[in-house]
Image (cartoon, rainbow, N blue to C red; front, side, top):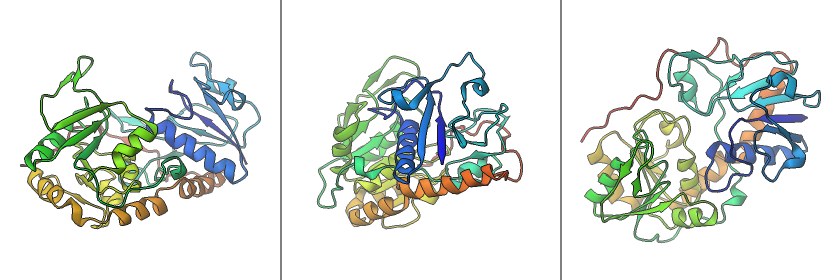
Length: 328
């Protein structure tokens, strides 16, 4: 099958320090090529893939930029125009306001789909060969937070609070102690260590040596690569029961979910009771690129054969990104 992935972000493939969506696209494309499919990209930044990439021009109709080459086009944004080729779209985020989506839109989890009045979803998978081996032995003396430090939805403040109340150190991967830009953030806690926008082996090393991921998000997480990356590298997850989380953390051996700070603190204090080996094996077997590739292949066949992926047009009736409650 000839597959064209279309994405509009400025970040190149493969992703370096930042770019969760780009990491997923890259992992999917690599898995597809291993299955013998031909893969090309329509993108703003060709990165290291100039020979496989068509330059995306935002000022030109998409329909005019796609040649007769692909059998199917996989948009990584909700493309709502006409196209002479079969296509589907993956929605990687949450609606910020009332809106509609193309009927052949794929979401990232069952809850993500439900929040947009849809049924079709595929869990993100990653190419675990890029992550090295997990650490299933005794960890170092810290927990980690992985996400945008300045985002109230990701709730770094909550992670700092939880770690501080159980007298544990917290490594923050994804931001700086002082952020003076949009949504400024300042942290003066002595038990936090800000590592900035780390990527690659440095990021993997910090995760695998951690006691666990403290991730008290206050929104409906569409999926959560921070969760599956942490699990694969051997760390349990302590998070809230919002969005995809109950689907991803559905085994008490690999993590704990609560919207209560007190209950999360109690679980974090017992982090060594969780099985690091079980965390690794679960992520390895369920959230890998091969599983994702097979699921998308079936959906490609559906749209090529003229079928729709959702019974009705997906839509959001309002802001799906609203901040959600936590209790003491």
